[in-house]
Length: 229
View 1 (cartoon, helix red, strand yellow):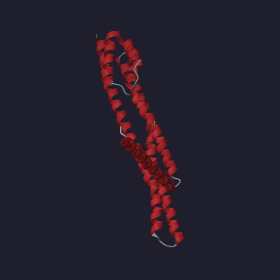
View 2: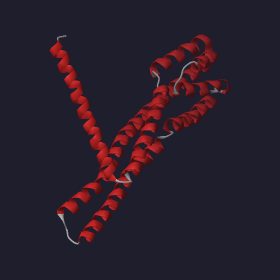
View 3: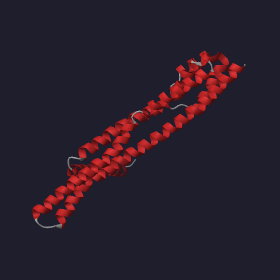
View 4: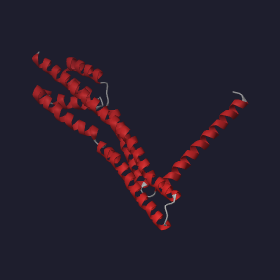
Protein backbone atom coordinates (compact mmCIF):
# COMPACT_ATOMS: atom_id res chain seq x y z
CA UNK A 1 0.00 0.00 0.00
CA UNK A 2 1.43 3.37 -1.02
CA UNK A 3 1.92 6.29 1.37
CA UNK A 4 -0.73 8.30 -0.46
CA UNK A 5 -3.25 5.48 -0.01
CA UNK A 6 -2.44 5.22 3.69
CA UNK A 7 -2.79 8.95 4.22
CA UNK A 8 -6.06 8.90 2.29
CA UNK A 9 -7.39 6.08 4.44
CA UNK A 10 -6.38 7.91 7.66
CA UNK A 11 -8.09 11.06 6.43
CA UNK A 12 -11.24 9.08 5.68
CA UNK A 13 -11.22 7.53 9.17
CA UNK A 14 -10.82 10.92 10.82
CA UNK A 15 -13.60 12.37 8.66
CA UNK A 16 -15.94 9.55 9.63
CA UNK A 17 -15.04 9.93 13.32
CA UNK A 18 -15.68 13.66 13.15
CA UNK A 19 -19.01 13.10 11.41
CA UNK A 20 -20.07 10.49 13.96
CA UNK A 21 -19.06 12.81 16.77
CA UNK A 22 -21.08 15.63 15.26
CA UNK A 23 -24.14 13.36 14.95
CA UNK A 24 -23.71 12.28 18.57
CA UNK A 25 -23.39 15.89 19.69
CA UNK A 26 -26.53 16.78 17.72
CA UNK A 27 -28.50 13.98 19.39
CA UNK A 28 -27.23 15.00 22.82
CA UNK A 29 -28.24 18.60 22.14
CA UNK A 30 -31.74 17.60 21.06
CA UNK A 31 -32.05 15.24 24.02
CA UNK A 32 -31.32 18.07 26.44
CA UNK A 33 -33.71 20.41 24.60
CA UNK A 34 -36.50 17.82 24.90
CA UNK A 35 -36.72 18.33 28.63
CA UNK A 36 -37.35 16.02 31.55
CA UNK A 37 -39.63 13.60 29.69
CA UNK A 38 -36.70 12.52 27.50
CA UNK A 39 -35.27 10.55 30.43
CA UNK A 40 -38.19 8.16 30.95
CA UNK A 41 -38.35 7.69 27.16
CA UNK A 42 -34.67 6.77 27.22
CA UNK A 43 -35.42 4.42 30.10
CA UNK A 44 -38.10 2.71 27.98
CA UNK A 45 -35.55 2.20 25.21
CA UNK A 46 -32.85 0.80 27.50
CA UNK A 47 -35.18 -1.55 29.39
CA UNK A 48 -36.95 -2.60 26.20
CA UNK A 49 -33.63 -3.46 24.54
CA UNK A 50 -32.54 -5.35 27.67
CA UNK A 51 -35.67 -7.53 27.57
CA UNK A 52 -35.23 -7.94 23.80
CA UNK A 53 -31.66 -9.19 24.18
CA UNK A 54 -32.76 -11.63 26.89
CA UNK A 55 -35.64 -12.94 24.72
CA UNK A 56 -33.37 -13.24 21.68
CA UNK A 57 -30.88 -15.32 23.65
CA UNK A 58 -33.63 -17.51 25.15
CA UNK A 59 -35.34 -18.15 21.81
CA UNK A 60 -32.03 -18.97 20.15
CA UNK A 61 -31.37 -21.62 22.81
CA UNK A 62 -34.93 -22.95 22.48
CA UNK A 63 -34.59 -23.45 18.73
CA UNK A 64 -33.57 -26.86 17.38
CA UNK A 65 -33.62 -28.64 14.05
CA UNK A 66 -37.05 -30.20 14.51
CA UNK A 67 -37.00 -32.64 11.59
CA UNK A 68 -33.56 -33.93 12.49
CA UNK A 69 -34.50 -34.32 16.16
CA UNK A 70 -37.71 -36.22 15.35
CA UNK A 71 -35.72 -38.65 13.19
CA UNK A 72 -33.23 -39.14 16.05
CA UNK A 73 -36.08 -39.81 18.50
CA UNK A 74 -37.63 -42.39 16.19
CA UNK A 75 -34.27 -44.13 15.77
CA UNK A 76 -33.73 -44.11 19.54
CA UNK A 77 -37.19 -45.62 20.12
CA UNK A 78 -36.46 -48.40 17.61
CA UNK A 79 -33.02 -49.20 19.00
CA UNK A 80 -33.35 -48.74 22.76
CA UNK A 81 -37.01 -48.02 23.39
CA UNK A 82 -38.38 -45.25 25.58
CA UNK A 83 -35.36 -45.11 27.98
CA UNK A 84 -33.01 -44.42 25.07
CA UNK A 85 -35.32 -41.68 23.74
CA UNK A 86 -35.55 -40.10 27.21
CA UNK A 87 -31.75 -40.04 27.43
CA UNK A 88 -31.58 -38.33 24.03
CA UNK A 89 -34.07 -35.67 25.19
CA UNK A 90 -32.02 -35.04 28.33
CA UNK A 91 -28.90 -34.44 26.24
CA UNK A 92 -30.66 -32.09 23.79
CA UNK A 93 -31.56 -28.51 24.56
CA UNK A 94 -34.63 -26.76 23.23
CA UNK A 95 -38.36 -26.55 23.80
CA UNK A 96 -39.22 -29.59 21.67
CA UNK A 97 -36.79 -31.78 23.57
CA UNK A 98 -38.32 -30.66 26.87
CA UNK A 99 -41.86 -31.40 25.65
CA UNK A 100 -40.83 -34.81 24.31
CA UNK A 101 -39.09 -35.60 27.60
CA UNK A 102 -42.26 -34.87 29.56
CA UNK A 103 -44.34 -37.09 27.29
CA UNK A 104 -41.88 -39.99 27.23
CA UNK A 105 -41.70 -40.04 31.03
CA UNK A 106 -45.42 -40.93 31.04
CA UNK A 107 -45.26 -43.29 28.06
CA UNK A 108 -45.36 -46.39 30.30
CA UNK A 109 -48.78 -45.25 31.58
CA UNK A 110 -50.28 -45.34 28.10
CA UNK A 111 -50.64 -43.17 25.01
CA UNK A 112 -53.36 -41.01 26.55
CA UNK A 113 -51.21 -40.17 29.59
CA UNK A 114 -48.24 -39.30 27.36
CA UNK A 115 -50.45 -37.08 25.18
CA UNK A 116 -51.87 -35.23 28.18
CA UNK A 117 -48.37 -34.70 29.57
CA UNK A 118 -47.18 -33.30 26.23
CA UNK A 119 -50.13 -30.90 26.06
CA UNK A 120 -49.64 -29.71 29.65
CA UNK A 121 -45.91 -29.22 29.34
CA UNK A 122 -46.34 -27.62 25.92
CA UNK A 123 -48.52 -24.93 27.51
CA UNK A 124 -45.87 -24.38 30.20
CA UNK A 125 -43.13 -24.16 27.60
CA UNK A 126 -45.16 -21.65 25.57
CA UNK A 127 -45.53 -19.47 28.67
CA UNK A 128 -41.77 -19.67 29.16
CA UNK A 129 -41.15 -18.56 25.57
CA UNK A 130 -43.54 -15.61 25.90
CA UNK A 131 -42.18 -14.45 29.24
CA UNK A 132 -40.94 -10.85 29.07
CA UNK A 133 -42.89 -9.94 25.93
CA UNK A 134 -45.50 -8.13 28.03
CA UNK A 135 -42.80 -5.72 29.21
CA UNK A 136 -41.60 -5.00 25.68
CA UNK A 137 -45.23 -4.38 24.69
CA UNK A 138 -45.61 -2.06 27.70
CA UNK A 139 -42.59 0.02 26.69
CA UNK A 140 -43.89 0.19 23.09
CA UNK A 141 -47.12 1.74 24.39
CA UNK A 142 -45.50 3.85 27.09
CA UNK A 143 -42.80 5.58 25.03
CA UNK A 144 -45.20 7.46 22.67
CA UNK A 145 -47.48 8.36 25.58
CA UNK A 146 -44.54 9.87 27.43
CA UNK A 147 -43.62 11.70 24.22
CA UNK A 148 -47.13 13.13 23.85
CA UNK A 149 -47.14 14.16 27.52
CA UNK A 150 -43.82 15.94 27.02
CA UNK A 151 -45.23 17.66 23.95
CA UNK A 152 -48.27 18.89 25.88
CA UNK A 153 -46.00 20.21 28.61
CA UNK A 154 -43.83 21.93 25.98
CA UNK A 155 -46.87 23.51 24.34
CA UNK A 156 -48.00 24.85 27.69
CA UNK A 157 -44.55 26.37 28.23
CA UNK A 158 -44.62 27.85 24.70
CA UNK A 159 -48.03 29.47 25.28
CA UNK A 160 -46.85 30.79 28.63
CA UNK A 161 -43.90 32.39 26.83
CA UNK A 162 -46.28 33.99 24.33
CA UNK A 163 -48.41 35.29 27.19
CA UNK A 164 -45.41 36.82 28.95
CA UNK A 165 -44.16 38.40 25.71
CA UNK A 166 -47.64 39.83 25.11
CA UNK A 167 -47.25 39.23 21.40
CA UNK A 168 -47.22 36.32 18.96
CA UNK A 169 -43.65 36.21 17.72
CA UNK A 170 -42.85 33.57 15.09
CA UNK A 171 -39.52 32.82 16.76
CA UNK A 172 -41.18 32.23 20.13
CA UNK A 173 -43.94 30.03 18.69
CA UNK A 174 -41.73 28.05 16.30
CA UNK A 175 -38.96 27.49 18.84
CA UNK A 176 -41.32 26.40 21.59
CA UNK A 177 -43.28 24.04 19.36
CA UNK A 178 -40.08 22.53 17.91
CA UNK A 179 -38.80 21.72 21.40
CA UNK A 180 -42.21 20.39 22.41
CA UNK A 181 -42.34 17.97 19.47
CA UNK A 182 -38.93 16.47 20.26
CA UNK A 183 -40.37 14.20 22.95
CA UNK A 184 -43.03 12.90 20.54
CA UNK A 185 -40.36 12.22 17.91
CA UNK A 186 -38.10 10.33 20.30
CA UNK A 187 -41.04 8.44 21.79
CA UNK A 188 -42.21 7.28 18.36
CA UNK A 189 -38.69 6.26 17.34
CA UNK A 190 -38.28 4.19 20.51
CA UNK A 191 -41.68 2.54 19.95
CA UNK A 192 -40.80 1.66 16.33
CA UNK A 193 -37.47 0.12 17.32
CA UNK A 194 -39.03 -2.05 20.03
CA UNK A 195 -41.99 -2.96 17.78
CA UNK A 196 -39.62 -4.54 15.27
CA UNK A 197 -38.10 -6.73 18.00
CA UNK A 198 -41.55 -7.60 19.38
CA UNK A 199 -42.91 -8.69 16.00
CA UNK A 200 -39.81 -10.81 15.39
CA UNK A 201 -40.20 -12.56 18.74
CA UNK A 202 -43.91 -13.22 18.19
CA UNK A 203 -43.26 -14.75 14.76
CA UNK A 204 -40.38 -16.82 16.18
CA UNK A 205 -42.55 -18.15 19.01
CA UNK A 206 -45.37 -18.98 16.59
CA UNK A 207 -42.94 -21.05 14.51
CA UNK A 208 -41.62 -22.85 17.59
CA UNK A 209 -45.13 -23.64 18.82
CA UNK A 210 -46.16 -24.92 15.38
CA UNK A 211 -43.06 -27.14 15.27
CA UNK A 212 -43.84 -28.45 18.78
CA UNK A 213 -47.41 -29.33 17.84
CA UNK A 214 -46.45 -31.02 14.58
CA UNK A 215 -43.56 -33.00 16.07
CA UNK A 216 -45.65 -34.00 19.11
CA UNK A 217 -48.22 -35.58 16.80
CA UNK A 218 -45.42 -37.56 15.13
CA UNK A 219 -44.17 -38.73 18.54
CA UNK A 220 -47.64 -39.87 19.63
CA UNK A 221 -48.11 -41.72 16.33
CA UNK A 222 -44.74 -43.44 16.80
CA UNK A 223 -45.61 -44.52 20.35
CA UNK A 224 -48.98 -45.76 19.16
CA UNK A 225 -47.35 -47.89 16.45
CA UNK A 226 -44.90 -49.30 19.00
CA UNK A 227 -47.73 -50.31 21.35
CA UNK A 228 -49.57 -52.03 18.49
CA UNK A 229 -46.55 -54.25 17.91
